[in-house]
Amino acid sequence: GAVVSQHPSRVICKSGTSVKIECRSLDFQATTMFWYRQFPKKSLMLMATSNEGSKATYEQGVEKDKFLINHASLTLSTLTVTSAHPEDSSFYICSAGDRGTKNIQYFGAGTRLSVL
Amino acid sequence: GQSLEQPSEVTAVEGAIVQINCTYQTSGFYGLSWYQQHDGGAPTFLSYNALDGLEETGRFSSFLSRSDSYGYLLLQELQMKDSASYFCAVRDPSGSARQLTFGSGTQLTVLP
Image 1: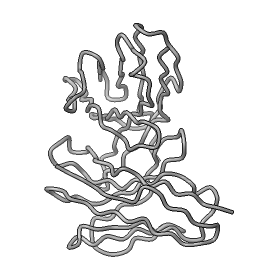
Image 2: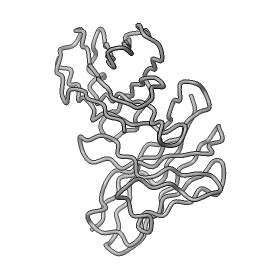
Image 3: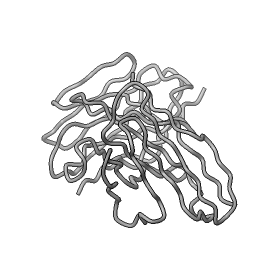
Image 4: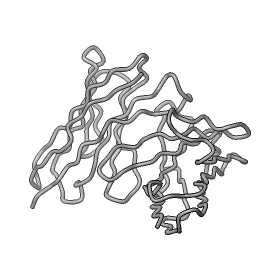
């Protein structure tokens, strides 16, 4: 199946710093990628839809200036958590879908962010 | 909007059969999907139903009844490695063409 690579898998940073997370589709082109946040034992909460060559679409309640998304190519989307605070600590996962009728989403391995 | 309901937890023993139910409400229906997620890992696609009936893939099967807005995931011959969270999902017609809305997840624990 298709592969989505997400990096880094884990990051620990000090409060106030910015953290960039990369999501790459390795063997297919993705005009759209999705960024999720997941709390322990909870569901995947969609944060934003990353659109290649245009602005991301953010879900209600998600601060676009806090979570900057860039989708500069058909294989790469980045999420930057700006001025991170402890409440931003979470598991962030990206996904990209193939073009088939089943709309299968392929997920990255996730990034565990811990803000001290 | 979309909403999906599934049980929060299910426990079963090795070798048993377990069924995880999912009921959904959506303004437009484009199929019901199931994903598996192990602790700390990425969700992985398990199955997809667009039409009524049963889809079988090895030990896993998925069923859909569109008239009842209901589906289930059936896991047979349970193994310890099946302990994971299982999410049902539907496409969100108000969002991007490939955007999914996920249920809250069912934590399956397989006991020896």
